[in-house]
Amino acid sequence: MNTVGATGSPARATWGRTPPQQREQQQQLLQVETEPIRPQFRSKIVCELTCRHCEAVVCRRGMKAILLADMNIELFSTDVPPHGVQLVNNDYQTRNCYCRIRDVACLGCGNVIGYHVTQPCEPCMEACNNGHFWMFHIS
Image 1 (cartoon, rainbow, N blue to C red):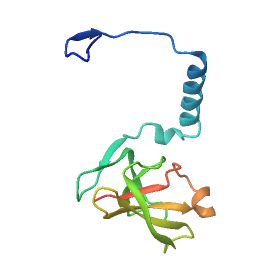
Image 2 (cartoon, helix red, strand yellow):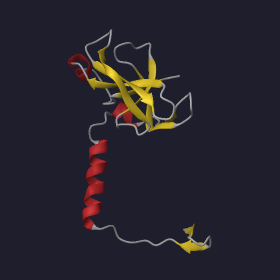
Image 3 (cartoon, one colour):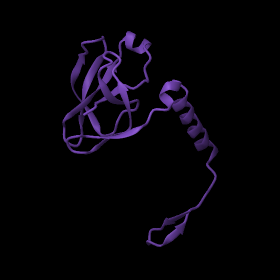
């Protein structure tokens, strides 16, 4: 494997052993990421999501999903706090269940592009869910 060095000339990649502590951390991270995932969610495609208004990257781990409370609504979701958004306004309750949610705005342009489930309700937590609490409008 060749890479380009600081001078612009090819440099050889160096390979080394991963320190035991770092190896343990990597194994724990892999275990945490894969254990709670239900088999039907393992084969889903992961997408990079961009804001429709300004094209800023808002999430690198999005997944197409269907809203549990209304199966006619498609959206994108993620299980980790996205880096390109900010929570805005106050929490409010959904119409279809008792979840508390808060709008999410793009850091690039300020437009509301989705929401975050700040407090999921018991029926939603008991339903088959993928553990994703950051939702993005499909458009």
